[in-house]
Length: 358
Image 1: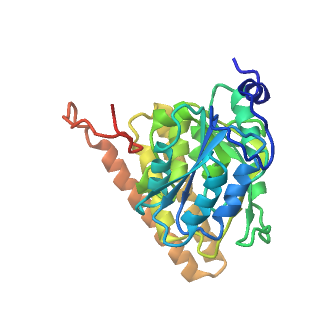
Image 2 (image 1 turned 60 degrees about the vertical axis):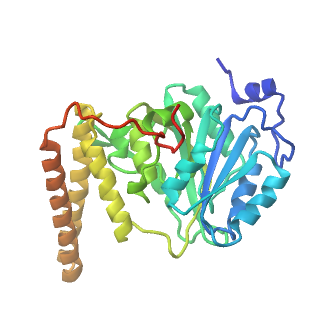
């Protein structure tokens, strides 16, 4: 059993250091996948934060999802001086597809995998903190930390309270919503209340766990990272460390929870969680609680707005509530349809990540 990350790196004969430029490709410990599309302005800072990690035994696969700017040239410049970095290019297919195709190009022998967005920045000890936690807790399928927001210039975002909100965690225990302890790991009951793994760059995953639950689902983009975390929570708990490990860059065009695209993805994830045939009885109950809690909050917001005299805003909130109820009714009907048994299916030529099957 590995006693710690320092011992492992000593055994490999590697040196941990900031700005390391020599090759350490022999036995990479961690696969880092960065999907990128037209991020010429930001990708360099993201790569710099990877190369500044106190853990040196990693590979960085950057999947260029059909960029039309100078993104590829920037990446190629880094790859020329650090052979831990590789550029893979493909046609544009969206971020979830890019994550999957990037993962398919990683070394199958790495122990851990993490997906970092192309404009975010890590703390220097991010990989050290997260991987040490996974070594200390073999029961964890993955682990996540905290994040703070930055603006397009890389400066702290004014009024940012993300770290505080991420620390304020709750989970369903039975049919009750209760506060979570600071040392408590994230499970299915927590993720049915809220997506605490807010961005994949804070989330280090055991390769074996990722292989077990399968790829990112492009149909749930931009909530595909939440969907993946939910599926991982079915096979193990997700560890939690109270360390800021990432600076999450926010743009003027960043999707908000009120955008039509985000709302559509939100309901797709909720639907998947409700109808998944691998759910235990308890998990099915928790999925219903989480969905109905959102509906209840929507009703409460509508009445609050109405009491304040904001009739139009209240009317819009009631419409949203009706939409939630209608969606739930449709899901409930779907769940009552008998499953087709013994259905013959052709064997796929590739797995969920797009890799050719043996």
